[in-house]
Image (cartoon, rainbow over all chains, first blue to last red):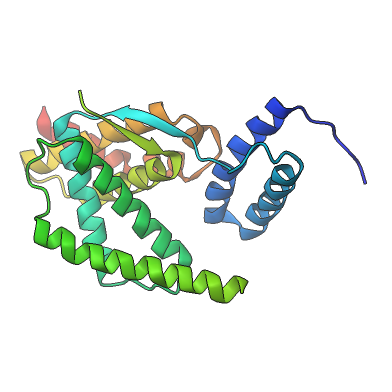
Length: 145
Length: 79
C-alpha cells in the first residue's frame, strides 16, 4: 500500500478542510463524502492528538438590523419545517438543530432585538427541537448498536 | 457592534436560508426591497467571514447567480 508521510501541521490542515468538503459533498454525492470521511477517520486514528474534526468557529459582527433580519429568516424556516419534521431523516433534524442553535446564539448575544418570537413560542418550539434530538439519538443507537 | 461566534456549519445554514429568503420575496414594496438588499448584504458578510464556503466548488455560486434578478429588482425599486 502506498504510504505518504505527513507532518502534524499538514494533518491539522487536512482535518480542518475535510469536514467542510464532506458537508458540501453531501449535496452532490454520498460516495465522495464517504471516501473523505474514511480518510478523516484514518488521520484521526494515526494522529490522536488532534481530537475532533473541529469545524472552525469564527466571530461575525452583526448590526442589530442584520441580526433581526436573520432571526426573522431562521424563525420562518423553523416554523415552516415544523409541519414537516421527519425525525427519521438525520439531515432534516441536523439542519433543524443548526437553525435553532444559530437563532439562540443571535438572540443571546444581541439583546436589543425587536420582533423576536415570544417566550411562549420559543418554549413550545424548544419541546419540538428536544423531541427531534431524542429521535436523532435513538436513530443513531439503532443504526450503530 | 455586537458579534456572534458561529461554526462553519451554522454559517452554511444561514447563507442557504438567506438565499431562500431572497428567492421567496416579491419586490413590491419598499420594505420587501429592503429585506432583499439586507439579506444580500448578510450573505456577502458571511462569505467574507467564511471564505472556504466559496473556495470549494459549491452550490453557493450557482445560487447567487439564480437570485441575482431579485436583487437587481430590489435595487431598481429603491432607486
